[in-house]
Length: 85
Ligand SMILES: [Zn+2]
Image 1: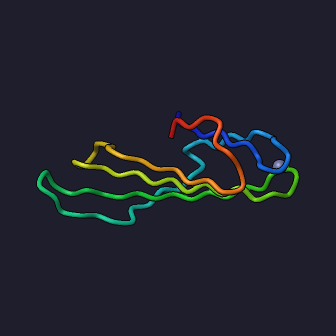
Image 2: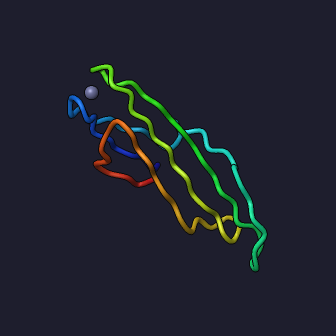
């Protein structure tokens, strides 16, 4: 199971968010030479014990279909410690 670990910018507490906690949805698709390139995006927001909001936005692209070929994670409110998403 893939996950991301984020350290809160305010209190340094480390939070782990599992991929299953993120709801991914298809946000875009493009017809290319080898078929469809599909973009998936998922967001999750958690609140740290100190009250800080930490937001994770993860995108990945499948091309050709079923093969993950690129990914990108954006985090606000914290710093990524480990990312296996
Ligand atoms: Zn905190």
